Image (tube, rainbow, N blue to C red; front, side):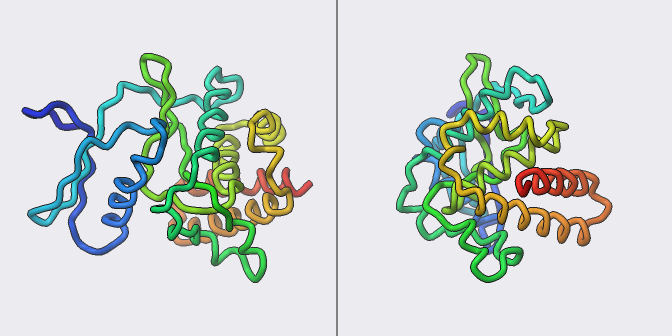
Length: 227
C-alpha cells in the first residue's frame, strides 16, 4: 500500500527484466480492464529505472471463510460463477493453459483446453468481501484460456483443504450456474492431473506443509469425483 500526493494505491512492482514475475504483472495489467468490476481497478502503470509497476484502487476487504457451515460459501460459489462467465477477451486468447500439460498425457490434455478465462488460485485471500458486502476476486497474476473445469476444480480442492467433505463440496458447487455444463470425464481427468502435479511439487519441496495439505485435498477430491 502506498500513499502519496496522488492518493492511496495498492502497488505491485517487479524488476523490469524478462522472467516469470514480470510476465505475471504485465498479464495482470492487461486483463484488468476485462474483469467486469470483479477485481479492483488498475488506475495506472509505469515503467522506468529498471522497474515495472501497477497501481490499483485500494479496497477494505476481508478474506472469505471456506470452513464448513461458513455463511460465505454462497458468495464463494458466486465468485466462481462470475469468473467462468466472463467473456474471453482477445488479449487472453494466446494464454493457453499449459501448467498441467506434463500431467496430462496424450489426448488427456484436451481436458484443460477451452475458451473460458480462468483463475486457478482461488484461496480465501483471493476471494474477498469488502465493508459494503461487495465481492471481489484479486491477484489475477496468471489468467489463462482453458476449460471451465480448471477454475471449478481448483476451487473444489481449496474447499476440501479447508476441511469440507468432498461430497459437501460437490453439493455446494452443484448449485452454481456452470456445474451442469461441465464434462464429467474431463473433470475426473483434470482431478487426476492435479494429484500428479501436487505430488510432483511435494517431492521438490517436502518441508512445505501447505503443499502436503493440498496434495491430500487433491487426492480426496479425485477419489470422490471418479466414483
